[in-house]
Image (cartoon, rainbow, N blue to C red; front, side, top):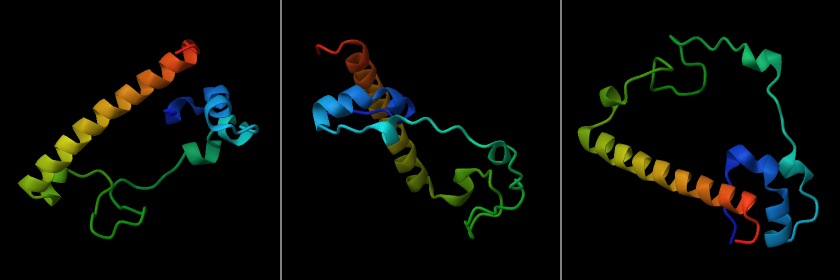
Length: 101
């Protein structure tokens, strides 16, 4: 089994090679920096130009658009997701620094 953390894929080459058997991990471990033009986006917070037709603002309060039940369910799911993500990151980093595990 292999657990990878997206933030540290640049360091995952040895694990992917040893566990999955891939020999060329260049695309996986290649770091891409955002272009200057992408960093200076002006997408207008008052008008959502990202494709969502139902939300007028890009920054919005979910309690305004979700029922109490939906909000509770999504909040609990997000909390579980955060816990699982932290566990996966820890497993990845432990395997990175302790290769004999």
